[in-house]
Length: 209
Image (cartoon, rainbow, N blue to C red; front, side, top):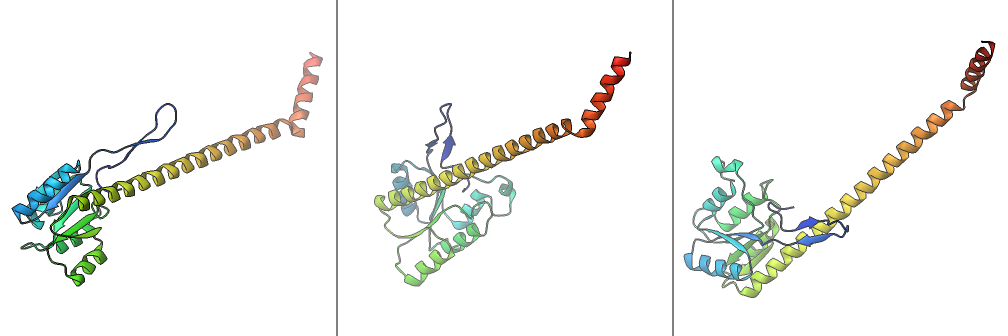
């Protein structure tokens, strides 16, 4: 799962599995203050927690991937939305660094751009971007992305639940098999001819006294 739980499994006394859905934490990266405000507003309307930064470098610092003091204090982020064209570290460069990180490689990254350049789009998708959105980003785009991520997380939780149930069943079967084998061994020891002979001799000695 990605850093920060999006879905949390709960098993009440009745044994029914329920899934709760805390809000998504989104890191929005854009050097344009106007575009930053727009995407932040759209995300908040969609009930997301939002953190905004103005550059790819600041994003790495926030995530603790800059090699500095923050490296030991990784943030919980469920989605990263970044502009493509930024001075210094571009959105594509940021995408590559995130996907190279063991802590954040599973976190979905969405690239935004006002330029519809096909090779650029294909390059980002090939590198692991979840989607490539053209500006201006619309509320429908944000809601679609959120639903996609929530659905993916729900499927991961379901897979994890089935895996845990299967492992529990295997453990129970192994324990049951081991107990049965031990019981059978004890029974075999009691029924051996040697054991019967020793018992008979003991009874004979007792009768003499």
